[in-house]
Image (cartoon, rainbow, N blue to C red; front, side, top):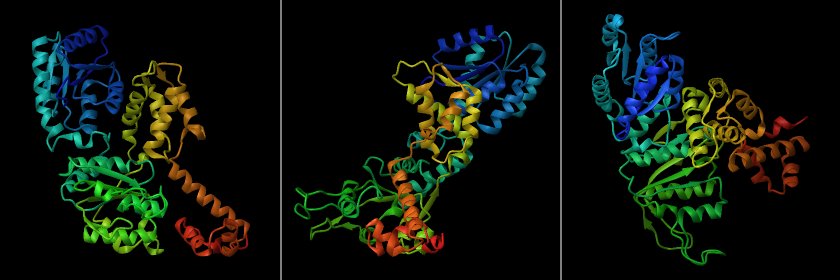
Length: 449
């Protein structure tokens, strides 16, 4: 529950009663969202953080009890108050036996309304904050059971200080999860330092990680302490660890074993107290079998493995994320875009998301930029999903795909001859073989094409 201005969802198909209750509740400093029927209420619950639902009992299509059952199923612990007419009090009593927090009779007494709201919010506070302050995971939006189980495990291991390997597809939020683990740990007051191991060439990556002394190499005009020392007593996040060159894997393993780091060009070692979280979208088991990733390093890093689900495995989170990105995109702008049409949300939920959460954010930004109406229609979403430009991959993803496409092309041109292909690519034969292995390509498969 929010400590300031709890958010209430009022569900009623009577506009006049709705207006009266909204005025009363807003006068008491509650934030009030409204829905005119059960289906609309579920749509709001999927996209907004709600502390309490207040619903009329008698509504067309889905009545208040049916709505309560849906809320109980998808959002266990969220309190529901039912408003009833005098003649339906027996039904309301039955509802409280099923788990409805309370009921109010029409005409609604203001004092009783506020009393029940206060009691319901107080009762649900423990459910919302029972484990620990939820600030540690504030940037991870989810209502998915799959994600909630993952986050519960993440919080459990956060204080143990063991190394964590986060696996998952590109764009699924690996760095956000790493930051959340850091925030839930005893190191949260110290630095969280991140580096992408695929973004830098080997010499520069070594210098960034371990530091260097002045004059260690051309361009080293001053001492550089390196990220291990910068993250001392905090957390170092090694993104795309699967792309780390073999020589650096050996040096990283030594640092993890000895808890000491020696800058490039230095004869002195420095003790470091760093929690390591690493991440990859690669299959490290395959990389180990192919000789591209050290087994001893893998077991050092993979004490606990957390597998982030793809976005289509947590489809119930898509409306919540889409509305979050919409609010973030329109914040501070003069645009009038306020929401997605229900059928537009259905399109988002049913879409394929190869770029995961990052791709969803790009699609939302595009639809907001191009929408000429306050409510984004399904046609706008359909256009964004259909256009190839709707998903802009990260630089590393784009480079990885380009590299693989190039290798396929040159191997086809040479009909599988690694020697000729390496010559065309202006790479030595050994390096070219390593590139083929990295992308899972076999020279034999191109012979005779």
